[in-house]
Image 1 (cartoon, rainbow, N blue to C red):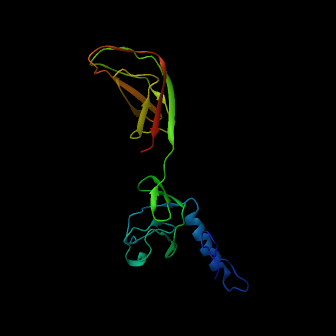
Image 2: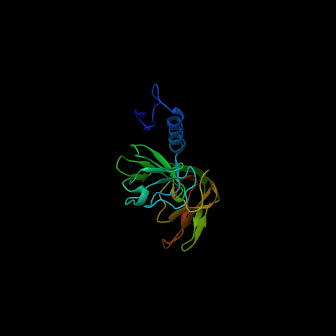
Image 3: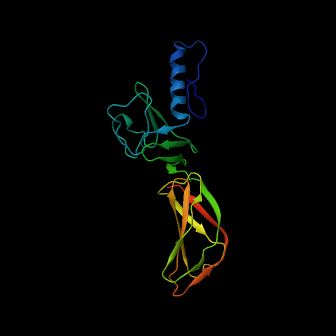
Length: 197
């Protein structure tokens, strides 16, 4: 029976008996693959009590009912159904909270866009051995644990600048002067970039 070229869903054919079976199989494939969300991507053996519609990316050394389906998408619809991924397929992995894509040879994390924010700050004089923290910088989408970079608008004269997410949607910049003398920094537009963890 012929299948669709991209998702390999079965076509209905002329004079076919029980067309509803083929049609329902195609709907199950679509249910699994459209907006794909899988529970796990490292299991090698199928779970003992899967729920209807549960989906997984099969691990690298599959056993049991999954044997021979490494890296395939396994979905449970009154039994296991397998789909070999094509390059570019994307899947949300629920237990890792990560978006993956299939490279053609394996699943890799999808690069997450960076979130940028700017603010005007006039740090002024910072004595040796002391530090200063900016007020909160709004960066919509930032969350505790995300990575943050900071870019100063001028030479920091040896002052160390770090940045962090201080609360949801907010970053802060910390300056620390360990230069051996007082340093005065002027007003300027600072930039922060948050990368999702």
